[in-house]
Length: 55
Image (cartoon, rainbow, N blue to C red):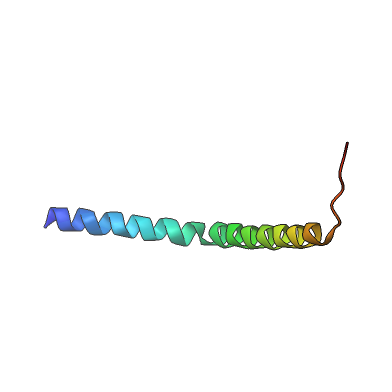
């Protein structure tokens, strides 16, 4: 019984961590999505530019 209680306590702690960190997690996901979109735009524009040879 004590093992079960400890296990549920650990699960509760893990969920509590997620709840407490949720705003930070969402913010980081948002930053990641914006950076990926920015990178995609850079790659699209780079593909449209004529290549320049340097000698």
